[in-house]
Image (cartoon, helix red, strand yellow):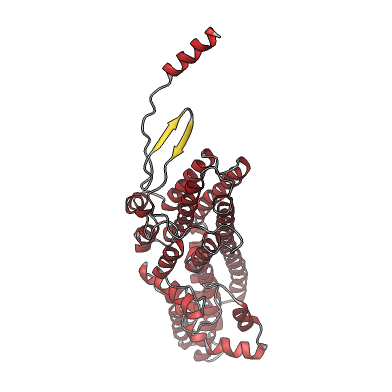
Length: 426
């Protein structure tokens, strides 16, 4: 007994004095006591709107980029605003901007599908023809097709003695090779688009899963050892999840949007918002804050081990998605291949009028060269428009969906479970 008491005394004397740790803004102190971390109650007054008022703050974030109705005009206006903010021409990629025809730049609904595939084929064809003048492909390709047509008209007007004898066989062989190149390039561009869209679908699913798990564990469980800390942590996690989604959209959009702090300042204390805004990757910092909050609740005993592990796995998946999006954005299809396709098209369009000259009237040659240029160059332009996938994915609308999911998880709890307090300013 004396030996055991001596060892205990030595152990107590050897315990180092716990140094204060750096904490996130809004948290009073963090103290380490015999290996256990205790986080004091957050001063919710530091948070915009106060913790527990998540509905108003999520609505405020949504109002910064209004697209809550899901209507055609609202979705397209949000996408147009993004492009104008970044200094680009929305007529190049925001399909359906003027015609309001179905487009990949917005989320489809039952009404959209009905308009897209539910009409009679003749009506659909006539509608597509009547809205041809609003085509993003026509807008981009028309100058090139017009120059090719002018060149063809000049060649076709030359006297026959000045035209070199040309066989159509080289043009046919080159046209076959061009078709294969264009299909290869376009298919790979669409694979990138589908991968990017899949990542955003996973973001919606994973953030919803995290929100449901945290809401169930921290807001509706009446047997928690520290319910007040759990309630505060739940609302902080809600804001970090919303901030992560919007900041990832801003990062992938670029321009002035990437530097904007309005979303962070609507959700987080000013000091924390400014600090995250100054970091290299804002979405990763929002995930790191979320991970620290989840870990603190695990150490406080508010999260069981299996749930903490599941949440860590979900946060890891979000972390990986950020990396995948950065890879898609930073590594395009090999530009050498794309330049080779363009140069081959130039050679083909240069020689094509020599094959057609003398076989029909100059005006007819010019017309058919215009149509052929529109088809071939248009296929290349489709690959160009699709390759940077995040330009046409409706990320604003997807962020709005995440906001709605978080509101359902943390605010719109059913009446038969414990409701969160409306304010936590005590």
